[in-house]
Image (cartoon, rainbow, N blue to C red; front, side):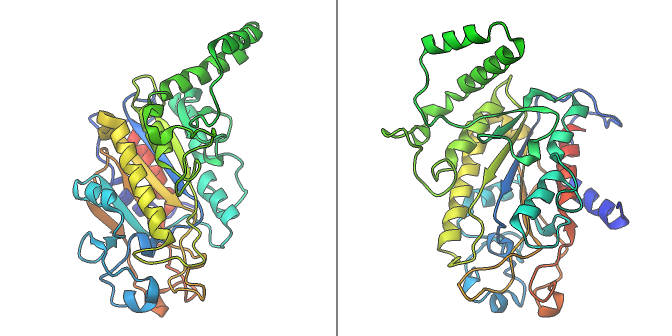
Length: 379
């Protein structure tokens, strides 16, 4: 249901995107070729109070206890960033990052599976819609031919699933087939124009990505396995972000990319300034900087939106972690972003202010942020 509050929230989120040098259009036209949109899903429910601590709230330290961040990177005197998020802080200072708090999808229960379904379909509840909101948005912009939208994954996530064609890419983890072998495969496909076109597209994508493999951190080891680290693709998410950035930067490359990151479900031994969450945040921060570097001049025309399925509980649990919550934090980065701003309808952290006495209340609909990103990029 469209309400006055939803419209106002959408307008506020849209204000975080810079205006393009083009007249406002009242209908979709052919997709611009120079703008980029990257959607990063943080699966597992990121703790927004750790990533973006409200250190100026009088109740913050008492309600967070051992998980309180004592040395955040200050943003505006009230909110800060986790101390390992130095690259995001630099983007914020350069007015290339806008941060949202007390934000959530319409989902109000605490199932990862259902919460991610709502985040990716854009529905009002789980399993109401069968395709992703980003896939549905491709056709009206003439971007449904499989060349514009890229999933950095073995298979497209639900967000990009649907009738519009998309493509996927992952760094190689097995030895590449030799040229003679691929010539034989092409002969087999020669009489099938559909399969041949798909093969040519895949080979072209892989060829464009080979420059990213010049980075030693992206090369498989002697055993053919991915490099080790603390995230996806064998633990190191930097290769995925670097590869995506180089593909998006290409003149004839995709203009939309979706990346998955996991490991945000911190029920046990979450840690504060140090610990398992801090290590994941640091790896994530490094990967985002690698994405910016790989995009090069295209960064100025890029918006990166990062969101999680729901937030986490305000209070620490008995295992030194946090449990599934409701409201949380989201990020909008990029050279195309009117950043350097915090967006939060903050209600405080007292027991009376919390939802069900345990969660941050959701005050902004996450779909409004997605809609603003899409409209601000392509409208």
